[in-house]
Image (cartoon, chains in turn brown, orange):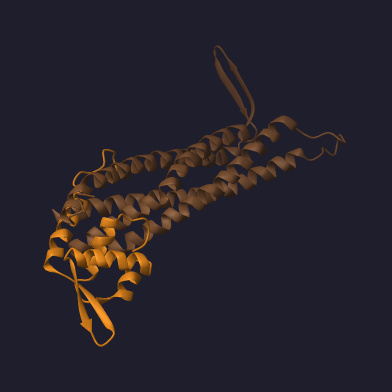
Length: 219
Length: 92
């Protein structure tokens, strides 16, 4: 029984750690790409030397610049939220690893209590992160498309597009990868949050038994 | 242990920590409590018979869990470990 619980707890912590790590990596890439797109957008807004006084492609570059700025801000927010959650999870994961398979009953309970406390402390951050990851995913998807397409025509018969440059394909794929990763993180964080919320509810319900044991049931 | 905990979690932590005699300072440091709340928790547990004081030296007192505390610790552990009886309903 103890082994089964230990294995279940360990699996959950490991997955939560991996999702947090994935988030950290992609948040860092998101910031870098955000800066890159901002720079590209600014360069696009500079004056054309052949026609003094006129910017090159005003509309598209402006849109890309604004979305890139949003991605940059979301990336910073994303990384700050993730670091906090990541740090707590790493400490618990390390303690779990140190204990090995011979971990005592009380030590296991202690780690469960710590994880619950960690979740209570970061409940709001996790909710924000779910939102930020979703928004980030959508922003990066739009950004990847907007920055790579030169012409897009949609008609009743289908759609056709022309790429700005073939070299943009890897960058576009990376951007799409980030958007998928952030949507994936958002999905898993919301699933984990649901499970931990359910556990907190179960704990609240079982507090009656503890109250009774402590002789506090009259209060 | 730090972070947002319920009083039952704090009681459990104190009782587990005091399975060997511990001083007041050691308890509040370990359980991340301030001296006022720490004193209240210890008084409550002593009053309920889960902790007893042991004089050690002239001015020092230590706290130790009683056999009754074992029942609370066991109940608490079983309730918390029960949370992991079933895996989450999503694929990990």
